[in-house]
Image (cartoon, rainbow, N blue to C red; front, side, top):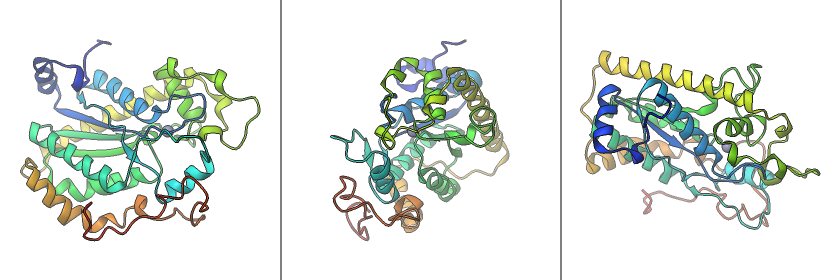
Length: 304
Ligand SMILES: [Zn+2]
């Protein structure tokens, strides 16, 4: 059933009802448009996560929500990383929002999943940095108040054997791993002719291992990820049957209260809310990545 429809936005209501009756599991996928080297389409992160989720749903059941391309960037360690890897490009072409917007959106997406009656939700991010750790923290914080069973991960967690079965290269940025994955998933959105002969430092955030990219290895990594997601989906659906469940999260009012009482007090501790990730203190003041580097004061402000 290779062309079985699983994408929420492309389905008729009766098709959604049939897919839901067969397997009440939802995939939520995330990624940031940002430079992924000169050789990959900028949407690689969400294209990857969403397409792999669709393959998993076709193989193991479930429905895949429209992908969320608006993700965390430009502040804290993301700004330091972007200064080093992307640098002074004419325009950034990022689709960025701050963590307090991203994670609140995620919470509202979970509310919709609970209101519809999904029994399991897999949240898959193709964009990294520490946002995936925060996503796991968010899931842990809100799971007691949400009926659907939740599991979140960066896609590289599902790529455990690594690049060539070496067990230690499950994720990268626009190097051999991500480029091979996109070659396997959407070959028309990879153009290795665009890799420059003379390489500067990470042109458009290209991973310097790009010359090792291989579509066949990408296909193997995709298969590994699809299998891993199928296993997590089965676990969630079993947990739904075997766990004492809270009432579903259904209203906007409940969702706001959950955000303010449970998530907000912990948000400043999230990894993506720190001004740096360790070694480097900030991007230089003349960097185009300096403006949003410092996490702003939020206490009591409108974003609360
Ligand atoms: Zn990426």
